[in-house]
Image 1 (tube, helix red, strand yellow):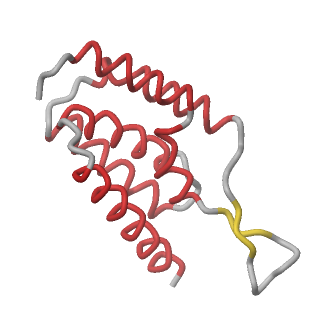
Image 2 (tube, rainbow, N blue to C red; image 1 turned 90 degrees about the vertical axis):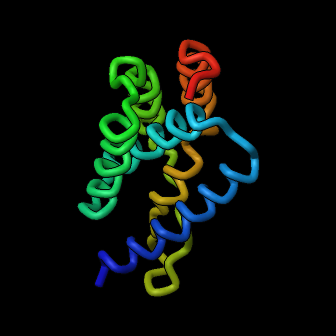
Length: 132
């Protein structure tokens, strides 16, 4: 049951992320590099379903779209550094008001806006140029 819950949250979060991406008119390279950051964050989560989704998304970017994992390494390092700060958003849990509920999908969806991650994304995009 918990897997379905995370699946629904992931789908809702990623649909919102994707619609914003297309509305903003981002290049394919920008979508890939930012998507790689989100995927890296998902892989780092404790929930197996989120890990699986992160691996699949990252694999699609690297193997399916031909992005160089060495070129993307600074993004992975920046995401890892951001995760180490431990500032996961928490929502109130009505069923257990004394304990909050972590929101990893929200956190991963917004990780691209963390200053260190954004700087790494910008550097990688500059190296990629205006290519695909």
